[in-house]
Image 1 (cartoon, rainbow, N blue to C red):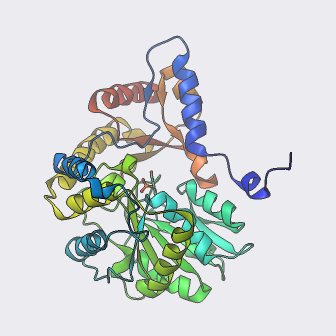
Image 2: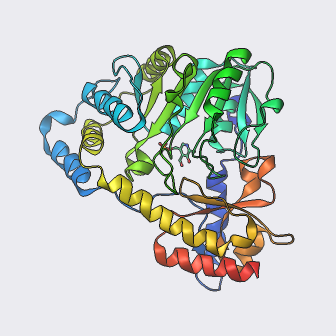
Length: 375
Ligand SMILES: Cc1ncc(COP(=O)(O)O)c(C=O)c1O
């Protein structure tokens, strides 16, 4: 047999798959039932009218063939209208919107269409582990960019030249919302460094304490510099449906559509039609979901107050592990799983991430166990 192509060997360990395997193995051992606060999988379903739109579309005989590869025009118009109404950004649905089978796909595609082998991709540290998969599959070079205490990149540590920068606010795992001026700083740095910017806005609507969602595309120069990824997974609880968007720079959008024309054959039409229903129908569920996570966040901050917890947005809380306490000990001795910080980058060592995408009862039990462990 021929050897595996080296690009597969370059892939980092899939952090969430390994975490799940460790937690499953611990759960099978004797003891109290384990509480899993490690995984970020939305626990609230999409609103009923969205599910009904999917059902109605799936019942029609004309929705089962190939959908237009680049996505439905009505869906592109619906997301552009949401960007105008909610985030104050004007986009041309024809040229500045690409439909993605989930925004995770866009994380990989962006690097493939913007970066040559061997070029540098700058990633936040700590940051979402799948960005490193994009670096590996492109054969690029990973340059970690440390995040400061307020979640802002330490621009002094950024390289003078790079092909691309990934940014993520509200950020997974550190749960920071975009600090004042950070998008302007990113545009300025990117222009100097000759880099494209990808802003991952997967948790855009999940912001707390009266903050307003803040899109990268609102700042001057953003449209020339890069794209933003929007996900239907978190705002509408549609994670399993696989629907997202790349929005912004028309050249990058066209390149992504070009790549997708070769790689995929569009998103199932009923999913796209239900996406239109989600984006254009009643929006109360977005606020209800946000408020539910905020209430859970409040309880988590109270339980973890001795550990410098942070939770300005997303459905995660990031906290410092006291000396001597590890995620392994929490798992084995206290039967509660959280995500070890080092899986998100070197700067995450000594921290952990807790997920609020957990129904109230197990969440509260898990928080009780964490409080006991921290005592
Ligand atoms: C920071 C971040 N970006 C992107 C994604 C991918 O989202 P999706 O592919 O469901 O749109 C996730 C999913 O958990 C995430 O946490």
